[in-house]
Image 1 (cartoon, rainbow, N blue to C red):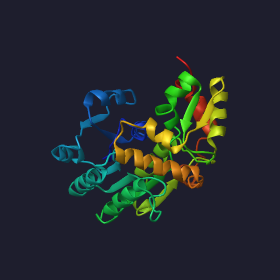
Image 2: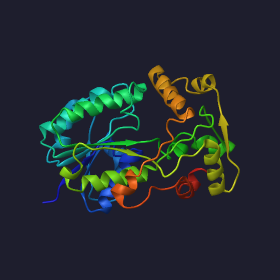
Image 3: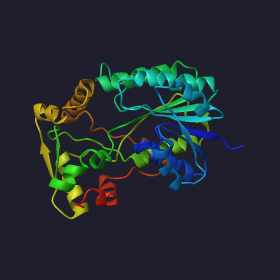
Image 4: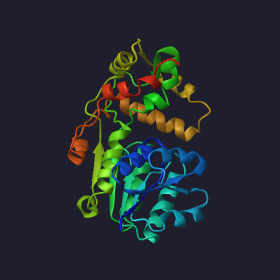
Length: 292
């Protein structure tokens, strides 16, 4: 009998890519979504996909989602409640007798003392490790998709994007590659990867001036990277919760200092092919970065 794989955060940047990757492999996939209506778009991957509604503020919705599940992709939302949500998900997986949990963490979660986001991820990893479940941790760098999801509007409307990163180089990764790694592990022998933590990166570290040039080449018009001071970046985020602003500024400080420039061979080792380049990403997503 085919194993059932539950994907949490299934409509998000990584989750939706993972649903695609699993269905491509013929895996029996169950997508946990906040809204069945919103999750319905996942049916274009496979009309038969199971959708299950999960509300993290209503823990009683979790047991049904986990019933009959063999493996879980565990992704917590970017929230100041993510430690509690992680605990609820791990507990639900344990109660359901899940065979394997693959958790999406973040690069730098193993750094001491690290930044707030890293400390949260480290605490969530530790809770999973102590659960007794078979587990794997994925620690990706920042996503290439951020340039569509967060910088996309200014790139389309102004031909520019604004970040407080100086000339710091970063090894952005395509969410496609994270999903391919996760799908490979979730459909492989669980014992082969138990207890492993894989740091996932793109193939090279780029400055944001170089990234602007790559996007410009893909879209056929000049794109400029504008380095903004910390005060300006904080002002641009006004309206967001203070914990979020502080966390993002800590991350930007690391990026500016070059701490997010490292690369690893993990994607190629696990999938058998190199990670996508920023040029490939920009070419594929060029229509989302061009003026309407």
